[in-house]
Amino acid sequence: MKNRKLNIKKIEESAERLGFNKSKLANIVDVSRETISQWFKGEKFPRPDKLLKLSLALGMNFNDIVINLPTENEPIVAFRKKGNHKITEQYLEEARDTGRMLSKLIPYLPFDELSRPKTLKQPRLDYLYIQQVAESIRNQLGKSLRETIKSEDIITFFNNLNAVIIPVLWGSKDRHENALHIYLPESMTTWIYLNLDCNIHDFKFWMAHELGHVLAPDLHNDEGEDFADAFAGALLVSEEIAAIEYPYLRKTDKISHQITHIKLVAERLCVSPLTVYFEINKYAEQCNLPKIDLEHNQEIYRANTNFNKLYKTVSECLFEGNAPDPSEYIRSTTEQFGSPFYSSLKEYIKEISKLCSEYPQNVLA
Image (cartoon, rainbow, N blue to C red; front, side, top):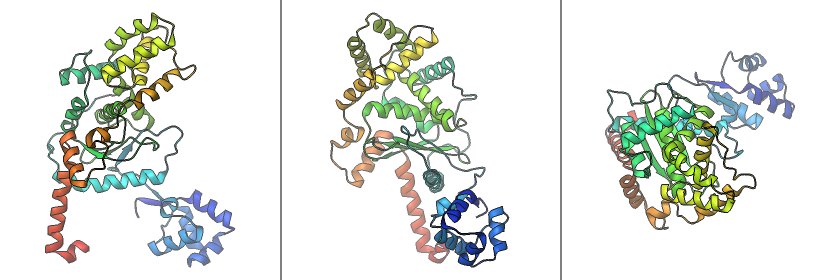
């Protein structure tokens, strides 16, 4: 418990609500009042049995009563929350616990252990800088500024950056996450859960977004999310493309014509109309040009929703709308994403099974 402390604020709130003073709480938990005071001052931490009694007395679960303190090699979690969805500390801790479990697979990954992944020196939220980064990635992919970036182009980058894609079926976008990103500082590995139940256009954006995270592991929280979003947009809709399309949209004030043109560009690039719209307006702002306004009456958002309805999710494309059995799921996703996750997991399970059969008592201990 050395990396944990009591959540004193929540404990005091619960105790006050229940009418427990320190003396009464001490009687219920079966410790002295002095011990309760030491807990509240952070001088001591309860033993497991006392911690259980304390949580039961206050009607609090473990994740509410205990705060996990960050450590030097603590897993770093990143994801874009949807709307006003509240991200709880419990959710974050569950994600960090997932990272701790994933660390057991590191010895079985086919990555170079002698060198660190190539990342950006000083990533920052600057339009011209992000355009330079996106152009550099395009050059490494052998793509011109006008060419369409394909999903497979992005996938090729992940293994070279010690990033592991973990395809998952999380359902439709009524949840806030289309991706979950876990970075393990000690091994410098990144683990990316990607939701296959996502529209094909949004899925490519999320892959590019996650690539932005991998390139800039030092940026965290909102700054990291904003950088990843900006990089994804710039990679998929280059400044040169935006510069070409902007005059077409300015030729007419008719919103329906502007929407139609944006949808055509989106279809050609295999991205969402919103991504095209935002990147064109970023270009306009950088050049001090008038923005294209399709948000006054939510026109672009309605068009984006209707556009996405015309296309399948990634899972529907992979499995033709059927629920795959585990073997088909593993085979197909491994083939499509080139992920070493399942092979590493298989080797880990084999190793643990061998240890269990040879040294059952030691393993259980």
